[in-house]
Image (tube, rainbow, N blue to C red; front, side, top):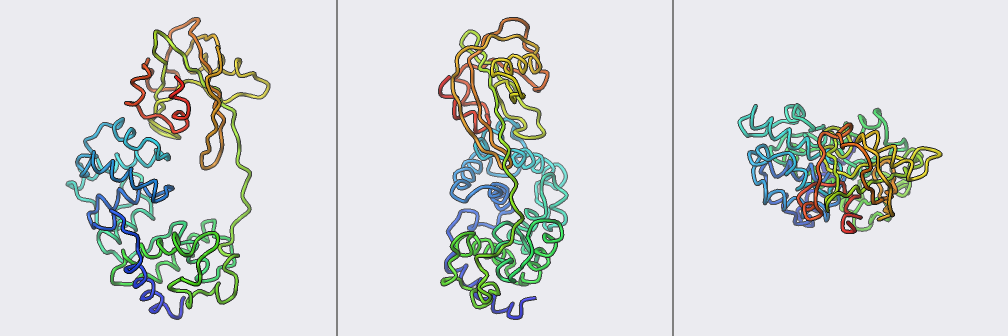
Length: 353
């Protein structure tokens, strides 16, 4: 454990209360708002999160409003943030809170984790910030701070490393103001103890940092070798009929669940784009199409893979579209696109239609 933990806590909290960014979710202890902010901030930078936080709150100001909202409305409000499982779980959890907890979020991390989609980090963040429970939080920023603070020489990935990081974080959380302390740890990692060029000269807890004393700051945290990111070639069919395009709604579970998309899929080895489109439309929709001109070629990166979308105008030749892989099909005019939630990659070519 850290010998000067008391000094570390005091110095960090003094710095945080003096230098913390003025963010709307830090001006409240309302559990719903704290929870909403924590879910949005997962995998999302603060500057990207701010407009979504304000937009969702304006539309759905209470947990009751969120629970009562149709799933499509929640997804539309979330559109562009990515990781749509967060939105679906947020909605499901809100309904559980209203139906089983009288509209009040549970006050402990243990009970919060019983709600749909709330994992250990989110539960501890909400419990400490909104309810003052003495529990730690460990996100990417906190992992980096801990790896340098304790000069950890082993990789921070994996179950054993994760357990050790949570134990180290637990030993630092003070009895008083645990929520402020947890936010201070995350703020330190986001603004001072950054991945590249950490600002050690202005770090409020530099005297406590073992990596700084050992001159190993730039070597921490240790990470496993990164795997090469896969790339997928995708064909997309913009099937038009009387000024409307055929759209499919993805199943609610899985990647991009519940969003609307144009038919299509991966190009298999040895296939041309036209052959792939014909096969995908046959498998997905039970129809034959004539492939026309290329509308767009757009690139998009997800967390674990990259795609290139090749969008072609197509016309129905035979068959009546059937939702073999989608939960619903719809013919939509371009004017209606603004009402539907699409994957972010689709927005790169929608204007061309």
